[in-house]
Length: 152
Image 1 (tube, rainbow, N blue to C red):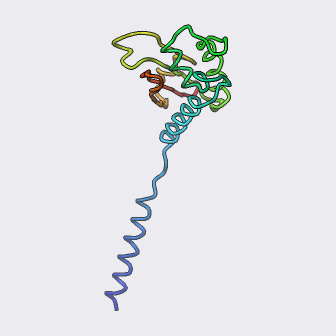
Image 2 (cartoon, rainbow, N blue to C red):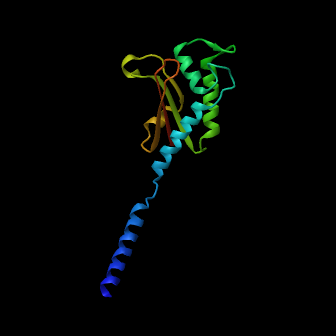
Image 3 (cartoon, one colour):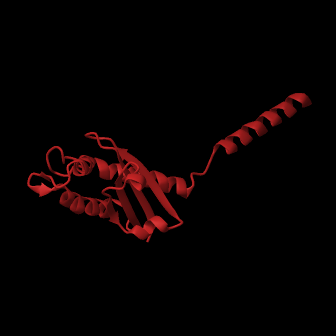
């Protein structure tokens, strides 16, 4: 009888231990990284109101890099990006956050080339920041997109 009670107590103790060890508090940095990544994907997938190859922000970015100086429905692609991205970021991000968005070709540090930057560059130097990286592989382009968020 005592052995059965002792086994039940041990089993309950193990169950409680496993229950509490499996419950993990989602840290704020993990939430911030999810938020930053989802914000970047939202911006890249947003429709611009133009026809192909400028129908989404990511299509406009890749076609602007592949064919600089070209237009979509009479507007320069770079002008579309300069107007669309800041408006989208301000509309979607939390008001207390500042952003820095960098779009550059793969291996830009070595090969150089054109680079687009939006937002405030000091955000990239902050210690408490969250970063999301994506690649755009459309129309033969290989572009890196980095979004950095920090409280401002």
